[in-house]
Length: 437
Image (cartoon, rainbow, N blue to C red):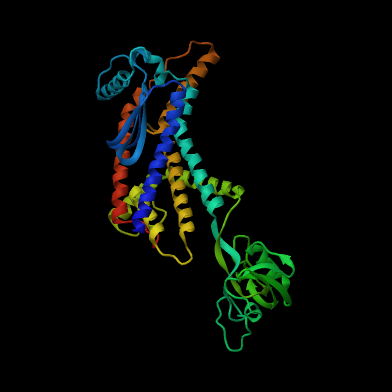
């Protein structure tokens, strides 16, 4: 039941992300006077639709994308002074022009998309990816700053039995009791002050313990709503010296460097800790960059996926996944029992998952190939560059860029994307990526 709920939540997140993307195209197009005949979420047969004004809004059966139909995407033959040509490619280009021109009502040529200036075309075509980028940031902000990230807290998770000689050693009959146990500290206590200093984080507490040395210090804790003061006889132990990344520091001989440090004898409980928005920004930037790198290495990833899917072997977590694979992960996030992981933690993971999906939509749609947004952006940039060059030369403004010539490429890219989608579905079914490994 929980697995199915996780999948449903993911599918809803996918539909919202697609709808949000298409709004990024719809709103500026309408604002610039372009007639938008359709706004659809999904492909295939229409499940539901309604017409408001001059636009039909609807949901289709296959939630693998969406579109807004902007009239006059390609300039007419008259606008670009196209000459009749022979050959199959010329026929495809001509058919694309005619289909686009057929959508333009009499007297509404000025409302065709191709009539927009290059900057306005860029706003319309970049609107969708930018909306995904914004949504990804909002979702990550909710997950990190609103819900929080699990981390060590000042609440006692467990109390050590003894003062062990190393972190892996077991207690023996000759070992002294751990200072926290000797002082009466219990699991569930929350440390609020150490040696007279207020404590608000595990980092503050662990630093104070290390620096306190071998002496008895007063430790204030909250237990069952009451504040108690315990006298804790700290001990000294030898522990490896760690660098900023948490890795052991090695000497010239390659041996771990140790240091004498204070020992308290408690394990902190992991709790959700809300992060400031300033911490969300670097996480967002890093996640976006990693997603962009994955998207632009898709050919390599696909070759690896083909080898694993049809040649055997294990598929690791770095493999690209399709909608089936991501849906499976969402189901596992919702249903897999993990000690200490509750509803809030699962909600944060789901939000991060949908945020990653939006970052993938952002990066993927910027690939400079039609029918993706990046292909239309490239056409607008080319047209704008020609017009700017004509201005510098004092020449008449050139005709619109004949973007209909990209139609054969668009069909080819569509076939490749369809094949890639089928491969991902098959790989996700026969070689699924699982959180359990």
